[in-house]
Length: 118
Image (tube, rainbow, N blue to C red; front, side, top):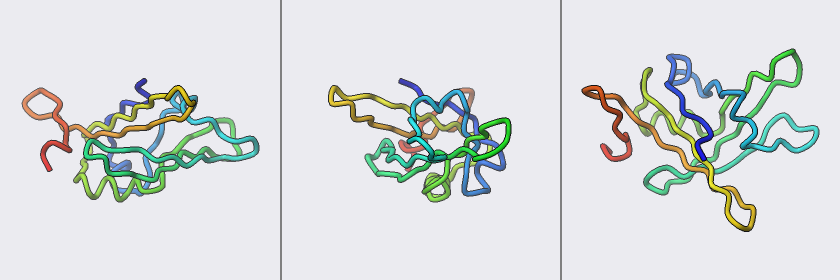
């Protein structure tokens, strides 16, 4: 299941956090009383990335963010404004959730995996 498909902004690649779509929060059940949840996502090379989705405690809007090793992921993949990040989740029969993250760059009108270029 695709959790998120987002074109990166300048802020997403320069800061160590990415604005996270509120509609995607259902893929990350927050424990009662908590405003964040950590998870591991595997990239196309099976490297693990420890990420965290968090929402603010106060205010009218949740304003979710993706943090954790996001800054390291951006740096290692050489991500730029305009690149795309796709996060997917598969639920195993045991109930365990497996997350995968991949980055793509548009060249000549087509999206290409950044992992394939490394």
